[in-house]
Length: 69
Image (cartoon, rainbow, N blue to C red; front, side, top):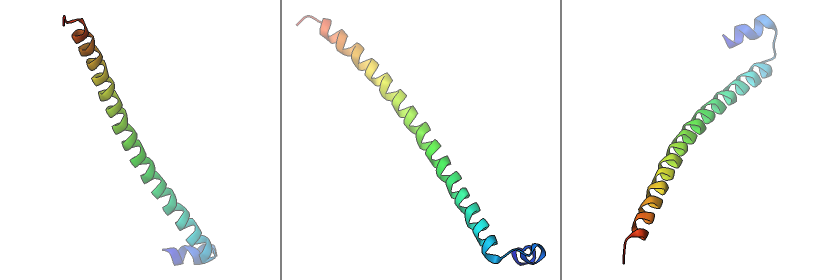
């Protein structure tokens, strides 16, 4: 298909290779973006979990601070 398109449209082979390379790079960029989004989602869940843990520990510290010694 590459050769027939090149012959039909009288495109230099280098142009087709450049387009293909650019398209492949965009595909890799999309994959990298997908991985980045997945990592961001994981980190947001981790932040939420840690914030909940901090809130619990603050309450526990306040409770134990009120206990008579």
